[in-house]
Each structure stands twice: as structure tokens, then as C-alpha cells.
Length: 224
Image (cartoon, one colour):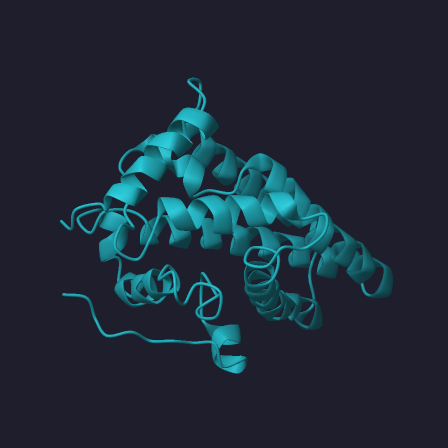
């Protein structure tokens, strides 16, 4: 295992002392993510009634919309200061990218999940800003079924995002890191954590659709 640079080690200790309270439990944080996502999906599934083939189109369209939101949410407010979104920028560019660099990516304990998972406040913000208004518009202009499929897919995408992001920050020996296809996605994300590339390359955390479309995809050589 590569030694953690002294500057990263110092920041991690500072972050843990200032940002991670004594009552924080990483597994409880992950349980919130699962409960929020799966609970919302279950409610939507319960409310859907006999969806038509046309209504089912909401699923792939929402997937593409979520990939777009992921890309631009990461590229702009997370890596460029935007008025009113300072917390997002501070937490991501100012903390996450100092806690994890391309030469020090794995977390060291479950308490470090605080630096990986979205906090409940930001979960509320992103769904309030992107999912709820669009879901309401979808329901108004189409059908309730389509809106429920939209919300369920958005929640599923969010959970997929969180699990994949976690997979990029677990040790190489962890089971998540050995899931087929994860190694290639880990390599893209590790490249993004290069201090010289983080503001310009590999903004998709899940699948690099928008990175390919907007020509910000950078495929580095395999790590030894």
C-alpha cells in the first residue's frame, strides 16, 4: 500500500477533529442513504398503477437526465464557487479533494464515510432543487405514473452514485473494489482526484456519458 503523504495525513487528522463529531457513525450514515433511497423507491412503486409502455420511457430518460445533473453539479458548484452554494464547493473541492488525492484514495475507517457520502442536508438540497420541481412538472404535463417513475429512477440513480463513489474509496482488497467493471470506473475517478485534473476532467462519478459527450473524459494508464 502506498504511504499517505504527510500533507494529506495532517488534513485528515484536522478534518476528523473538526468535522466528525464523537457521535458520528459511518454505518448509520450509510443506513440513512439506503433508507432514504429505498424507502422513496418503495413508496413510488406502491403508488404506480398499471404503467403504459410510454410511461415506462420515463426510466431511461430520467437516467440520462440524472447523468447530466451529476455531471454539471460536479463540474460547476462542486469545483467552481457559485453564490449561495458555498457549502457545496467547500465540502467537495475544499475538503473531499484534500482528504482524498490520487495517491491517497482509500478511506481508513468507517468514520471516514463522512468525507465520502452526501450529508443529509445536501441530499435534501439536490432532491429539492432537481428532483421535486421536475417531478411536479412531469406530473402536471404528463401523468402521475410518469412522475412516480421519474422520482423512483432518480432515487435509484442517487443510490447507485453513492455506492459507486464508495467503491472508489474503499481499499483495493475490499469486495466492492473487485466487482466486475469497478476497476475501470475507479481508475477514472482516481484520475479526477489528481490535483492538476480535478477541475477539468472526469466529472461523471457513475458512468462517463456526459464526460464523453462534452469531451472531458480522460483515461489514464492502469496503476501498477
